[in-house]
Image (cartoon, rainbow, N blue to C red; front, side, top):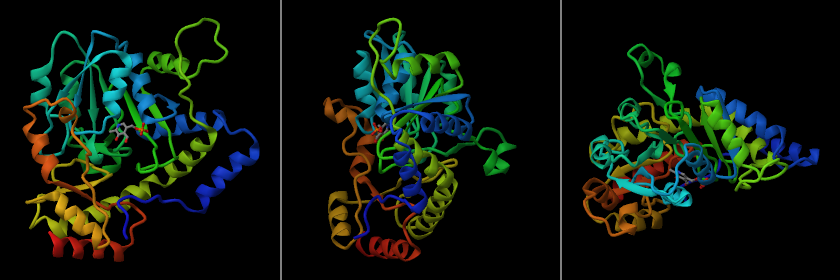
Amino acid sequence: MIPHSKLTFDETDYKAVMEVMRSGYISQGEKVKEFEKKLASYIGVKGGVAASSGTSALHLALIALGIKEGDEVILPTYVCTAPLNAIYYTGAKPVIVDITGDDFNLSIREIKKKLTDRTKAIIVVHMFGHPADMDEIVNIGVPVIEDCAHSIGAGYKKTEYQSIRASEYQKVGSFGALSIFSFYVTKMLASGEGGMVLSNDEKLLSKINDLRDYDKKDDFKVRFNYKMTDIEAALGLNQLKKLPVFIKRRREIARKYDKAFSGSFNTPSNLRESVFYRYVMRLKGDVEIYINELTNRGVECKKPVYKPLHRYFGLLDFPVAERIYKSAISIPIYPALTDGEVNFIIETITTVC
Ligand SMILES: Cc1ncc(COP(=O)(O)O)c(C=O)c1O
């Protein structure tokens, strides 16, 4: 069976973890600090604060912006429940918005329709590694938290000049007031569990740094235990070194899929400098039947989003997300896939779908 996701670890990852274990200092320490610095520098922002998960990073980012009961926070419907939970942790009201069919990201027209004077933040998820239209979203004038759980390393084309060389694309995670990342096992860069908040705003970062840990403080306020361990950070650091190679391989596989499928299926397009965390295409007919059949034939495929958020609340009028929910399939894409496996996936999908 070719699994839907698979870790890409090698001896250097095992060695990095063992070094920390042998040092005897395994909780939050120097490795965490180093990971914060290196990720901030890779994304091109001033600093970062590591956290225990992407969800806790989101919670801290919302608190740093002062989000509280009575406030409204906009988020897309086509995403897992993590951002929704983080908004509820603060007591604010989530305002769920439809997406576009092009890149699976928030629809700017729909955001504008749902703005009120209580809108205090927008959570922009760069879905499946595809950068959202950040210029347009930032122009709305509401503080933005970029959710980069899927999109570490993805580039957003900023200027004509920058479009000439991919290495000069400004990376997602550097546009909003704050951005968050997740290092959960299935993500682009895996450390088991873990997250990070990045920002150019040192005041926000210092607030988050204070709230992440409750111990040895002179005053009392409600704080959290949202720390990352040095074991996770060591793994994260080692994976970060390999990230450009991971991204290159994901893009290579995506190009093969584009070539094989674009004549027959609705394949992703207009994705800026996507990192292809997921390769999601749309089929005609009952997608569940295809998913079962492909999995039976040895290619594990999934619905890319378990359930769009509006469905949990019985909300109507999310036509694009509904259409995509019913027709989208996510097929295996990760650096550990061999060329032989990629060919087998292409052959199987061409036969079954
Ligand atoms: C878009 C998005 N944001 C946030 C998260 C939360 O990350 P974590 O699982 O590390 O809490 C996830 C997790 O899958 C996600 O997909």
